[in-house]
Length: 367
Image (cartoon, rainbow, N blue to C red; front, side, top):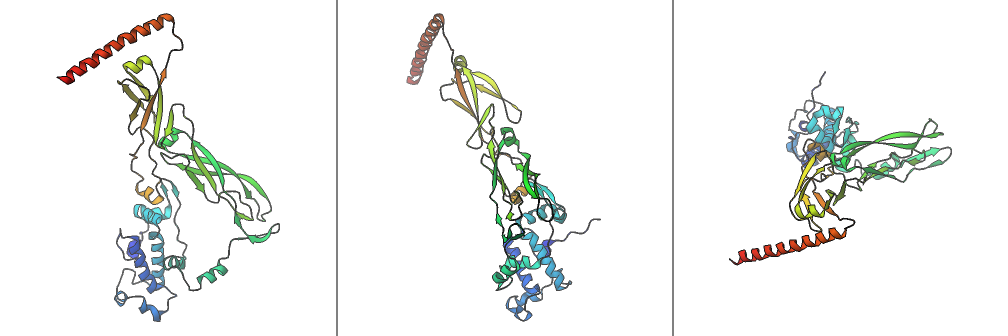
């Protein structure tokens, strides 16, 4: 059975599309009036009299319930990621979880700690917060028979190189990485063994070499330390036809003979997305000559944060690098005397025609 969804903007008495600063200010006004730990005799010093008689759709409820609702509403709308999901998918998507462009967003669940939300907005819940926190939330400790008692420190990170083919970079992909790590296998924390753990890498189109994918605290799980991070570093796998240049451009090298260099030619290139690209060369291919085909390179990776990625999930990638075609000359390995004589005669006649063409151009310019 579908239940009615709660309008978090209405709870804070703010319209949709309002800024985060306005939401925070609205929460502060309501929290000062509804916080159960406020001294009522000092309430007038913080809440303007004009706000006291203002009615909202929450007014018929008791103050404890209003207090719970405003904290839950601001816990969602005060977080950019939660707010983006709520605005697009509603409360159902927030509570049930949604698939985002950069991975699965698990269902949201409010923990019911109203003072946590209050403290995030006001900076503290008590003038003695620093002293109380040191007692109420001591540093992470361990206690084992073997190591005694001490403060847990974090293990160093583990880095691994992951090679990506240019086809994977062109379209983007998801890679499942299997890692082996030490895990505690009994309740007494006395026995450990290596177990396989699978991590999911979301490779965005256009991912550049050197991009780091960090999985926090996914390393070995020893009882006396905090697990270290596992970091995958992207690298380009060598390709038989293409080479990456300037992050988003592709370089293709085509071999030609002298006849093609002088007279022109046509050839086809099989692209990374399995198209056949026709290239027609009519120029004289001189040393250092290149042909640039715009927007046929790799997509430009935008590295969006999670909030922007949700908003632009259905947008088609329109920014690409260029395809740069370079040419290698194939020279004959050996010439017979007859072949050398023919080559001399050819270039002798060729030079005469060049001179005649230059003289004709000069006459035309003089007229």
